[in-house]
Image (cartoon, rainbow, N blue to C red; front, side, top):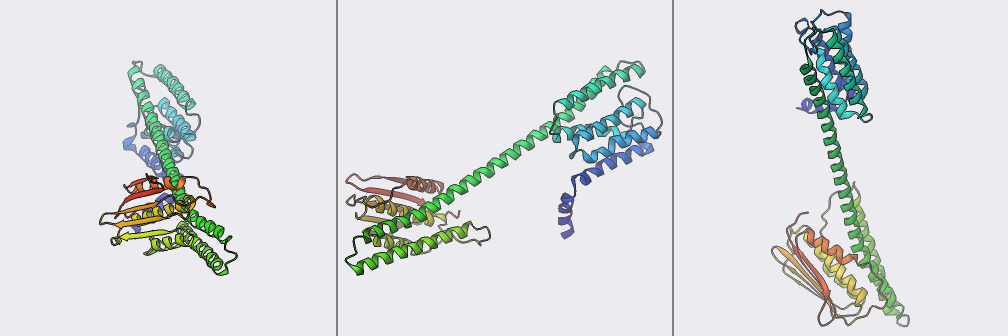
Length: 385
């Protein structure tokens, strides 16, 4: 079994010339067999003559260049065509004449330069060969024979050109798929960094701004600075975890935040001076996959926006775990202020909408009728992505 598996792999590792050589050798051996002499390609009706030294030259010219039909297709088709002309003018009609369509197919598929000039030159050469064969031939009218053979050769070139186009289209599709995958991964990384960095940095800025007014109260100042330090350490931990996930040598880890992270998130926001009422209903499922992570990011981004735009205002967080989905609602009452809050680019809510849409859920955000702002999300569970 090991030999069978390694055989094709070892064959693919060989040089392309070595892999193309056996076909040429097979045609050469067949051309040297007495039983196949005179049974090859015949154009023009010349009588078959016995093989001689020039017959061997014609056979070698038509067969051995097939070894380079993919590496140097122009050289291959030129040598094979020269051997074919010698074969037909001398009337050997060798089995090696079958190499010409193969050379044309490979040239149509692999030739990079002179793709218009080569068919034109070969067509002119075939026209000249047809005239010479007609003049030295038996005198019958072989026009239909010449035309049919020319169309067969043109078909071989056309098949090669189609193979080249199909290969180019497939390469372009793979390139675009790889580019789309890279762009999607960059977008995902940008969202993760935004979610992690923005929340922690916003909390640190708000906490440090509040600490400026506590210089007369050392105990409260110490607690505020301790909260800033704790938030910084959490930011470093989250960033290190994210970078570990991006490391290709890092083992697979579940992306879903561990239990209690929502409560930790709420407590961190409270220490930043935001009164938060947290309610969690139901029991978190063990197989929600990406749903828990998205729910965590929704709460994180909504609390970050509350710190930025409604600092000090009453904030409510409701997370409801159902059998097939998770619903999240985070709202503020508009009684806070924007003082000291860093600005934002507005990409956070847009990123949340994309996250929820990917899982087939619903997302909405907007001002409340009585003031404040509310973010709602319905996230289907049991998504293992």
